[in-house]
Length: 350
Image 1 (cartoon, rainbow, N blue to C red):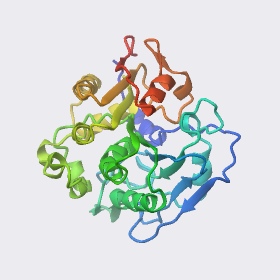
Image 2 (cartoon, helix red, strand yellow):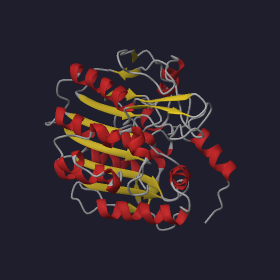
Image 3 (spheres, one colour):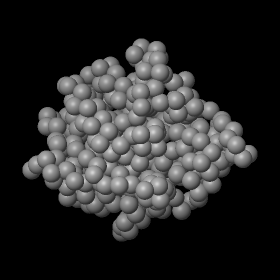
Image 4 (cartoon, rainbow, N blue to C red):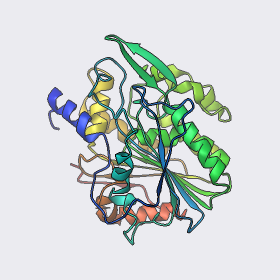
C-alpha cells in the first residue's frame, strides 16, 4: 500500500473533497432556479444559504441530491481555508453545478435522470448535512453546524412543491452520501408511493465506533422518531452504516445502494484523521466488512470499483466504468427500474 504524507493529506482534503469534476457542457443554465430560504438557514461561517432547483416539468420523476465538500471538527480542520466548502452565496455556484459531467450532463442521451426534476442541496456546514450545533473553537473561531436545518428547510420546500413523484432518487456524493441516507427516512415517509432509490456515492462510513465528532455536530438530535433503532441509538455504539441497515429494514420496498472505489484516497484520509493509528488496510477491510454485511439485506446492493478515485456521479466514468463485465451505467439504470442487480466487486482493485 502507498505511503500518505501529511502534505498529501491536506492537498487531497482541500482540493479533492469538492467531489465532482468540473467539465464544461453545452447546457445553458436557464432552467435552474435559485431558492434563498432565509429563516434559520446559515452556512458554517455565517454566510447565507441557498439551494438550486431544475424543474423541467416533463415527467413526474424527482432527484434530490446532497452535495459533498469536506468536514471539520476542531480548530485545525475548521480554520479559514481548511478542509470544507463554507459558502454557497455566490450565484456562480449555480453555473458551476449546472456544468457538471456524469449524471449532471443533461445533454447526454444515456443520462438516466435527464428527464427528472432535480433539487440540488448545497453543502456549507462541515457536518455531513446532519448537524445542529454552534461551536466556539480556540482562536475566536465559530462554526455553525447547521446542516440538518439547511437540508430540512430545502426539503420542506420540496414537500410543498412536489405532491407525489412517480420515481424518486435520493442521492449524494462524499459528505453528501451521508446527508442522503440521514435525511432519506423523512423523504421516504413523505412519498410512500414513489418508486424510490437511495444511493450513496463514496460515503461508506468507515469510522471508529462511537466517533465523538458526531456528537459534536449533534446528529443524534434529529434521528427519525419512527425508526426506534435509530431514535434510541446509543451514540457510543453508533456507526454510520446503521443508517443503511435500519432504513433498509424499515423501508423494504425501497432500493438502497452504495458505490465506492476500493482504495478511495479521500475516504481513507478522513478515516486516518478520525483516530490515530488507523491505516489504509484498516479502511479497506472496514469498507468490505460494512458492504458485505449490508449486502445481506434483500434491498441493498453495492458496486466496488478499482482505483483511488473519489465519487462517480459527477464523473465521465459514470458512463464508461465497467467492473467484472458489468457497466456501471447499466447497473445504475436497473436500480432505478427496481430490477435485480448483482453486488459488484473488483478483482484487481489497485
